[in-house]
Length: 114
Length: 115
Image (cartoon, rainbow over all chains, first blue to last red):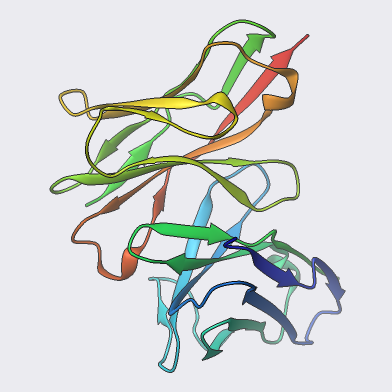
């Protein structure tokens, strides 16, 4: 149980285009989902907290107009990277909260912007 | 402010030897502590957590961790390392007053187990 999926697992896009990444909790409902960014061999940096039916809460320094987050249902949150640039290339990981303590992580999405 | 430190970027261990991956934390109040493992190009897998109770926590794949309040540490241990344990390990903390349940991660420790 407690499986989180991400789609796509890998995406290449051209500079200036937008990319949408989906995060789904497959067998549980998650009122809260988190989006992280990770550079190679570095830690996870929390980008935003996404709550179902409300606006996401962004961490300091994260551009909310560039990284659009939508949490339309209890099992789906999406991250859209708008007008992507090469510096946005990274590994994006989502997690879904289950209960008070647990977070379950998706497998990640590798974004490469050319 | 809450923080987690993993003082070692890399830990090298011979297969069959015990391993320790260190973690210290700073948080207001009692902490919720977690260990996760990440294999290349994969998401994080939950290993174990400490919320309350026994200071020695047992988790997945034979790993365990000891909560030490006086030293503010939560070191990850395994009695006998396997080559397949080679991965990136993250310690994380969440304060009980932490709004929204955000996790704060350490910088990660790369564990390399050689045959």
